[in-house]
Length: 292
Image (cartoon, rainbow, N blue to C red; front, side):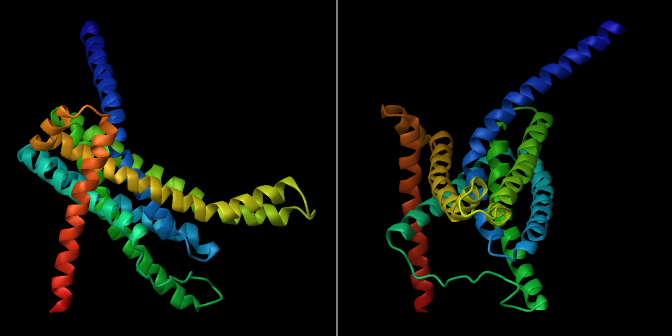
Protein backbone atom coordinates (compact mmCIF):
# COMPACT_ATOMS: atom_id res chain seq x y z
CA UNK A 1 0.00 0.00 0.00
CA UNK A 2 2.75 2.43 1.05
CA UNK A 3 4.82 1.45 -1.99
CA UNK A 4 1.89 2.18 -4.32
CA UNK A 5 1.41 5.58 -2.67
CA UNK A 6 5.08 6.54 -3.20
CA UNK A 7 4.93 5.32 -6.82
CA UNK A 8 1.88 7.58 -7.31
CA UNK A 9 3.79 10.53 -5.80
CA UNK A 10 6.73 9.79 -8.09
CA UNK A 11 4.39 9.75 -11.14
CA UNK A 12 2.85 13.08 -10.07
CA UNK A 13 6.33 14.60 -9.63
CA UNK A 14 7.36 13.36 -13.10
CA UNK A 15 4.20 14.85 -14.65
CA UNK A 16 4.84 18.18 -12.89
CA UNK A 17 8.42 18.18 -14.22
CA UNK A 18 7.09 17.58 -17.72
CA UNK A 19 4.52 20.35 -17.28
CA UNK A 20 7.24 22.76 -16.08
CA UNK A 21 9.45 22.00 -19.10
CA UNK A 22 6.55 22.25 -21.56
CA UNK A 23 5.33 25.48 -19.93
CA UNK A 24 8.81 26.96 -20.41
CA UNK A 25 8.78 26.00 -24.11
CA UNK A 26 5.24 27.35 -24.55
CA UNK A 27 6.22 30.61 -22.79
CA UNK A 28 9.12 31.06 -25.24
CA UNK A 29 6.83 30.45 -28.21
CA UNK A 30 4.23 32.95 -26.98
CA UNK A 31 6.79 35.56 -25.85
CA UNK A 32 6.40 37.52 -29.07
CA UNK A 33 2.66 37.91 -28.70
CA UNK A 34 3.01 38.65 -24.98
CA UNK A 35 5.40 41.48 -25.93
CA UNK A 36 2.89 42.83 -28.43
CA UNK A 37 0.07 42.34 -25.91
CA UNK A 38 2.10 44.33 -23.38
CA UNK A 39 2.77 47.18 -25.84
CA UNK A 40 -0.85 47.36 -27.02
CA UNK A 41 -2.31 47.32 -23.51
CA UNK A 42 0.21 49.83 -22.15
CA UNK A 43 -0.84 52.19 -24.95
CA UNK A 44 -4.57 51.59 -24.39
CA UNK A 45 -4.34 51.95 -20.60
CA UNK A 46 -2.58 55.33 -20.80
CA UNK A 47 -4.22 58.70 -21.47
CA UNK A 48 -6.71 58.55 -18.60
CA UNK A 49 -6.98 60.81 -15.59
CA UNK A 50 -4.40 59.68 -13.02
CA UNK A 51 -7.05 58.60 -10.50
CA UNK A 52 -8.79 56.43 -13.12
CA UNK A 53 -5.80 54.56 -14.62
CA UNK A 54 -5.81 51.63 -12.18
CA UNK A 55 -9.64 51.17 -12.09
CA UNK A 56 -9.68 51.15 -15.91
CA UNK A 57 -6.79 48.68 -16.03
CA UNK A 58 -8.58 46.45 -13.49
CA UNK A 59 -11.72 46.47 -15.68
CA UNK A 60 -9.65 45.50 -18.75
CA UNK A 61 -7.88 42.76 -16.73
CA UNK A 62 -11.23 41.24 -15.70
CA UNK A 63 -12.34 41.33 -19.34
CA UNK A 64 -9.09 39.63 -20.36
CA UNK A 65 -9.62 36.87 -17.79
CA UNK A 66 -13.17 36.34 -19.08
CA UNK A 67 -11.77 36.11 -22.63
CA UNK A 68 -9.43 33.30 -21.54
CA UNK A 69 -12.30 31.48 -19.76
CA UNK A 70 -14.30 31.55 -23.03
CA UNK A 71 -11.38 30.63 -25.33
CA UNK A 72 -9.72 27.82 -23.34
CA UNK A 73 -12.63 25.26 -23.32
CA UNK A 74 -13.23 25.78 -27.07
CA UNK A 75 -9.51 25.25 -27.77
CA UNK A 76 -9.41 22.06 -25.65
CA UNK A 77 -12.52 20.65 -27.37
CA UNK A 78 -10.93 21.26 -30.77
CA UNK A 79 -7.71 19.64 -29.57
CA UNK A 80 -9.60 16.55 -28.35
CA UNK A 81 -11.96 16.06 -31.30
CA UNK A 82 -10.48 18.00 -34.23
CA UNK A 83 -6.73 18.50 -33.62
CA UNK A 84 -6.07 19.48 -37.25
CA UNK A 85 -8.17 22.61 -36.58
CA UNK A 86 -5.50 23.77 -34.09
CA UNK A 87 -2.85 23.72 -36.84
CA UNK A 88 -5.19 25.54 -39.25
CA UNK A 89 -6.01 28.22 -36.66
CA UNK A 90 -2.31 28.43 -35.79
CA UNK A 91 -1.36 29.15 -39.42
CA UNK A 92 -4.25 31.62 -39.82
CA UNK A 93 -3.14 33.29 -36.60
CA UNK A 94 0.39 33.41 -38.00
CA UNK A 95 -0.90 35.22 -41.10
CA UNK A 96 -2.67 37.74 -38.87
CA UNK A 97 0.51 38.27 -36.80
CA UNK A 98 2.61 38.67 -39.96
CA UNK A 99 0.07 41.18 -41.31
CA UNK A 100 0.14 43.18 -38.06
CA UNK A 101 3.95 43.26 -38.02
CA UNK A 102 4.22 44.21 -41.71
CA UNK A 103 1.53 46.90 -41.32
CA UNK A 104 3.44 48.52 -38.44
CA UNK A 105 6.65 48.61 -40.50
CA UNK A 106 4.75 49.93 -43.54
CA UNK A 107 3.15 52.71 -41.45
CA UNK A 108 6.55 53.61 -40.03
CA UNK A 109 8.08 53.95 -43.52
CA UNK A 110 4.96 55.53 -45.09
CA UNK A 111 3.23 57.28 -42.18
CA UNK A 112 -0.49 58.04 -42.45
CA UNK A 113 -2.15 61.01 -40.85
CA UNK A 114 -3.86 59.83 -37.67
CA UNK A 115 -6.24 61.85 -35.60
CA UNK A 116 -4.53 62.78 -32.35
CA UNK A 117 -6.28 61.08 -29.47
CA UNK A 118 -6.97 63.39 -26.57
CA UNK A 119 -6.27 62.23 -23.07
CA UNK A 120 -9.33 61.70 -20.93
CA UNK A 121 -8.71 64.26 -18.21
CA UNK A 122 -10.92 65.65 -15.49
CA UNK A 123 -10.32 69.23 -16.74
CA UNK A 124 -11.55 68.59 -20.29
CA UNK A 125 -14.80 66.67 -19.64
CA UNK A 126 -17.58 66.17 -17.11
CA UNK A 127 -17.62 63.08 -14.89
CA UNK A 128 -20.43 61.49 -16.97
CA UNK A 129 -18.50 62.08 -20.22
CA UNK A 130 -15.32 60.63 -18.71
CA UNK A 131 -17.14 57.45 -17.61
CA UNK A 132 -18.78 57.08 -21.04
CA UNK A 133 -15.45 57.44 -22.86
CA UNK A 134 -13.82 55.03 -20.41
CA UNK A 135 -16.45 52.40 -21.25
CA UNK A 136 -15.66 52.80 -24.95
CA UNK A 137 -11.89 52.49 -24.44
CA UNK A 138 -12.32 49.51 -22.08
CA UNK A 139 -14.56 47.74 -24.60
CA UNK A 140 -12.05 48.38 -27.41
CA UNK A 141 -9.16 47.11 -25.24
CA UNK A 142 -11.07 43.92 -24.31
CA UNK A 143 -11.89 43.19 -27.98
CA UNK A 144 -8.20 43.63 -28.92
CA UNK A 145 -7.24 41.42 -25.98
CA UNK A 146 -9.65 38.72 -27.22
CA UNK A 147 -7.85 38.52 -30.58
CA UNK A 148 -4.43 38.40 -28.91
CA UNK A 149 -5.70 35.85 -26.35
CA UNK A 150 -6.85 33.51 -29.13
CA UNK A 151 -3.35 33.68 -30.64
CA UNK A 152 -1.64 33.13 -27.27
CA UNK A 153 -3.82 30.13 -26.37
CA UNK A 154 -3.54 28.48 -29.80
CA UNK A 155 0.24 28.93 -30.00
CA UNK A 156 0.67 27.60 -26.44
CA UNK A 157 -1.61 24.66 -27.27
CA UNK A 158 0.27 24.05 -30.52
CA UNK A 159 3.51 23.45 -28.58
CA UNK A 160 1.90 20.58 -26.62
CA UNK A 161 -0.57 19.29 -29.23
CA UNK A 162 1.12 15.85 -29.27
CA UNK A 163 0.91 15.48 -25.47
CA UNK A 164 -1.97 13.91 -23.45
CA UNK A 165 -5.04 16.13 -23.07
CA UNK A 166 -4.53 16.72 -19.34
CA UNK A 167 -1.02 18.09 -19.90
CA UNK A 168 -2.35 20.27 -22.73
CA UNK A 169 -4.96 21.72 -20.34
CA UNK A 170 -2.46 22.39 -17.53
CA UNK A 171 0.28 23.93 -19.71
CA UNK A 172 -2.06 26.09 -21.79
CA UNK A 173 -3.95 27.28 -18.69
CA UNK A 174 -0.65 28.26 -17.01
CA UNK A 175 0.36 30.32 -20.07
CA UNK A 176 -3.09 31.93 -20.23
CA UNK A 177 -2.84 32.88 -16.53
CA UNK A 178 0.68 34.29 -17.00
CA UNK A 179 -0.56 36.24 -20.03
CA UNK A 180 -3.24 37.89 -17.89
CA UNK A 181 -1.55 38.46 -14.52
CA UNK A 182 1.97 39.05 -15.87
CA UNK A 183 1.07 41.37 -18.75
CA UNK A 184 -1.43 43.50 -16.86
CA UNK A 185 0.79 43.63 -13.77
CA UNK A 186 3.64 45.05 -15.87
CA UNK A 187 1.22 47.40 -17.68
CA UNK A 188 0.08 48.74 -14.28
CA UNK A 189 3.70 49.53 -13.38
CA UNK A 190 4.33 51.18 -16.76
CA UNK A 191 1.27 53.46 -16.78
CA UNK A 192 2.03 54.60 -13.21
CA UNK A 193 5.65 55.49 -14.02
CA UNK A 194 4.88 59.15 -14.68
CA UNK A 195 2.70 59.43 -11.55
CA UNK A 196 5.53 57.97 -9.43
CA UNK A 197 7.88 60.44 -11.13
CA UNK A 198 5.66 63.45 -10.30
CA UNK A 199 5.46 62.35 -6.66
CA UNK A 200 9.24 62.09 -6.44
CA UNK A 201 9.61 65.57 -7.97
CA UNK A 202 7.15 67.06 -5.45
CA UNK A 203 8.77 65.15 -2.58
CA UNK A 204 12.00 67.16 -2.80
CA UNK A 205 12.01 70.92 -2.20
CA UNK A 206 15.60 71.27 -3.38
CA UNK A 207 16.25 72.34 -6.96
CA UNK A 208 18.84 69.59 -7.45
CA UNK A 209 18.21 66.31 -5.65
CA UNK A 210 18.30 62.56 -6.36
CA UNK A 211 14.53 62.15 -5.99
CA UNK A 212 13.84 65.01 -8.43
CA UNK A 213 16.41 63.57 -10.88
CA UNK A 214 14.83 60.08 -10.74
CA UNK A 215 11.34 61.62 -10.95
CA UNK A 216 12.20 63.49 -14.15
CA UNK A 217 13.66 60.30 -15.67
CA UNK A 218 10.45 58.36 -14.90
CA UNK A 219 8.22 61.06 -16.37
CA UNK A 220 10.29 61.33 -19.57
CA UNK A 221 10.78 57.56 -19.85
CA UNK A 222 7.08 56.58 -20.10
CA UNK A 223 6.54 57.48 -23.81
CA UNK A 224 9.96 56.03 -24.68
CA UNK A 225 9.14 52.75 -22.91
CA UNK A 226 5.83 52.43 -24.79
CA UNK A 227 7.54 53.20 -28.13
CA UNK A 228 10.35 50.71 -27.47
CA UNK A 229 7.80 48.03 -26.51
CA UNK A 230 6.03 48.67 -29.82
CA UNK A 231 9.31 48.17 -31.76
CA UNK A 232 10.21 45.00 -29.85
CA UNK A 233 6.63 43.74 -30.21
CA UNK A 234 6.68 44.31 -33.99
CA UNK A 235 9.92 42.33 -34.44
CA UNK A 236 8.58 39.60 -32.15
CA UNK A 237 5.32 39.38 -34.13
CA UNK A 238 7.21 38.65 -37.35
CA UNK A 239 9.51 36.16 -35.61
CA UNK A 240 6.59 34.26 -34.07
CA UNK A 241 4.68 34.28 -37.38
CA UNK A 242 7.75 33.12 -39.30
CA UNK A 243 8.35 30.36 -36.75
CA UNK A 244 4.78 29.10 -37.25
CA UNK A 245 5.15 29.03 -41.05
CA UNK A 246 8.57 27.34 -40.96
CA UNK A 247 7.40 24.63 -38.54
CA UNK A 248 3.86 23.95 -39.77
CA UNK A 249 3.92 24.63 -43.54
CA UNK A 250 5.91 21.85 -45.32
CA UNK A 251 7.09 24.13 -48.18
CA UNK A 252 8.75 26.63 -45.84
CA UNK A 253 10.03 23.83 -43.59
CA UNK A 254 11.90 22.14 -46.47
CA UNK A 255 13.07 25.49 -47.88
CA UNK A 256 14.38 26.53 -44.47
CA UNK A 257 16.34 23.29 -44.12
CA UNK A 258 18.20 24.01 -47.39
CA UNK A 259 19.28 27.55 -46.42
CA UNK A 260 22.27 27.66 -44.08
CA UNK A 261 21.62 30.84 -42.07
CA UNK A 262 20.53 31.33 -38.43
CA UNK A 263 16.92 30.24 -37.87
CA UNK A 264 15.99 33.60 -36.32
CA UNK A 265 16.82 35.35 -39.62
CA UNK A 266 14.94 32.74 -41.67
CA UNK A 267 11.85 33.07 -39.50
CA UNK A 268 11.91 36.88 -39.59
CA UNK A 269 12.30 36.96 -43.40
CA UNK A 270 9.50 34.41 -43.97
CA UNK A 271 7.23 36.24 -41.54
CA UNK A 272 7.98 39.62 -43.14
CA UNK A 273 7.49 38.40 -46.75
CA UNK A 274 4.16 36.72 -46.01
CA UNK A 275 3.14 39.73 -43.92
CA UNK A 276 3.79 42.06 -46.88
CA UNK A 277 1.78 39.76 -49.18
CA UNK A 278 -1.20 39.69 -46.78
CA UNK A 279 -0.91 43.46 -46.27
CA UNK A 280 -0.99 43.99 -50.06
CA UNK A 281 -4.09 41.80 -50.42
CA UNK A 282 -5.88 43.56 -47.52
CA UNK A 283 -5.04 47.02 -48.90
CA UNK A 284 -6.23 45.96 -52.37
CA UNK A 285 -9.60 44.82 -50.96
CA UNK A 286 -9.88 48.07 -48.96
CA UNK A 287 -9.39 50.12 -52.16
CA UNK A 288 -11.90 48.01 -54.09
CA UNK A 289 -14.57 48.37 -51.38
CA UNK A 290 -13.97 52.11 -50.84
CA UNK A 291 -14.43 52.83 -54.54
CA UNK A 292 -17.92 51.28 -54.51
